[in-house]
Image 1 (cartoon, rainbow, N blue to C red):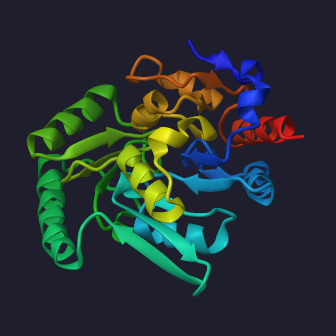
Image 2 (image 1 turned 90 degrees about the horizontal axis):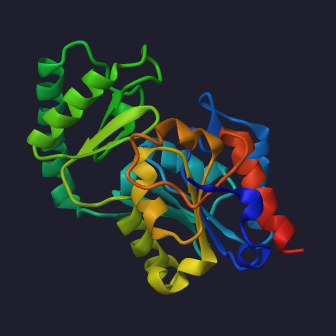
Length: 266
């Protein structure tokens, strides 16, 4: 069982330099980025912390996030790429897991998988942001549809895995892709490329906060792993829980987490 955030040692909190955060139901509440969370992102960055969302959301979202949000980089589609704003040119840069030619053939393969999945499960809907994805299929489990039953979700996951896809369940989508990348491998790559830092060596100076089963690899890796309160909704489904938990869910929980880190630096 995670310990409450208030029990996290303040001296450890004061050492954190990098904050990695999930977006859906961690930064957001009922699909909305509340002012408390946006302000918390800005305050963390103003105090010199590097702030990096790590999300299953698509390339289209990530382009908007890196342009408009107070963040230093963003990892998208569960680790398929990351984006940052180059300080010298003031232009967005993107590191892709696949090269240009590979992406063309990959997207053809992904389109075929989408057609087959829809034919096998004609009742499902793909996420409303599927059009702006480059690397994965996102099946809506509750965002814009009535929640799918657990049996239906498990059937979909089993089907996609038989098709040779990596599959993760978030709080709103089933995400599936052809490849071995994930949030953690992309985070390690980003840290070395953008900051010249070995994440294994910098672990104690980093924190991750999330809320759902697809965050389990991050929860198990980071010594300073946090969950917003709604992570408890997945306690029976998640392979690894965070070490610490906020008192509040979603946006308010993230703001609580950020305030604790900033207070520890005073």
